[in-house]
Length: 211
Ligand code: B1M
Image (cartoon, rainbow, N blue to C red; front, side, top):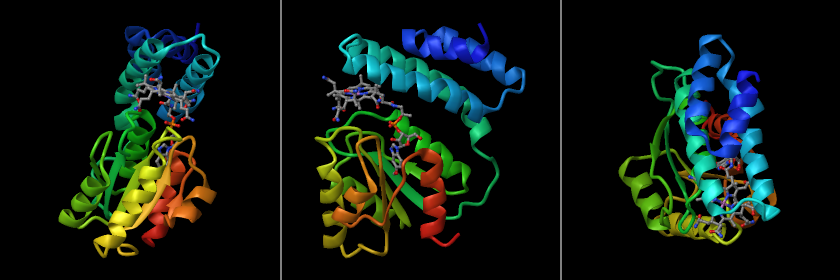
């Protein structure tokens, strides 16, 4: 089995050690980090989602798959992020209130950092107040909101409302994303932009700030 297949299988089975070993071996053989991400890790997580939907996987399987994916991501992170760049701006990032999914958000963080921005990652289950207060305190240029559940998407709207109340709407740009999120929803709630994946999020942040 090739390294990419081992990584794919390893994530599906939640075998963290196999994912780490195969990722290290692939990197040592100069396989591009982006290739490992897009051709093994992301497809594996998509398959985990499909199995969950089909009632073949349950939350524990999803959890160990996520742990294995994170271990692989940690290894390819340095290759995805360009080092030694002066920050082009500041981005406050987090997964919205009530939502604990952080793999996509972490990937967005890596790509935005790789594009030359400083990322202040607030983690998961972040309240609108926390987003807004941090953006204010740190003088951030952008707030990035991630949601993976249809039930937590409304917190994106609440966060934009909190930003408006703080008088920062327009000054701090809001970028949203996550599997259930769409451009249409972004327009509806008055977000400054929507990105469908982590690479698009980095391009969008650059574009919004004219960098
Ligand atoms: Co959850 N889960 N989960 N889960 N989980 C989904 C999201 C689900 C679609 C599975 C399914 O039914 N097929 C479903 C949501 C249904 C819905 O609302 N429509 C679901 C459910 C139901 C749940 C629970 C409610 C299950 C339960 O307890 N009964 C529960 C909720 C917990 C909570 O948050 N309060 C739950 C729990 C979990 C785990 C904790 C076990 C685990 C998360 C572990 C972790 O993140 N640390 C988990 C996982 C792993 C998933 C799936 C399988 C994979 C998510 C993932 O990491 N994908 C997921 C199924 C799926 O998405 N197909 C599922 C890989 C990642 C790279 O992609 O996050 O989409 P993604 O990010 C992408 C883009 O969306 C985009 O860029 C990334 C890639 O480039 N993006 C942005 C993301 N954020 C962005 C922000 C941006 C821009 C782009 O700008 C700021």
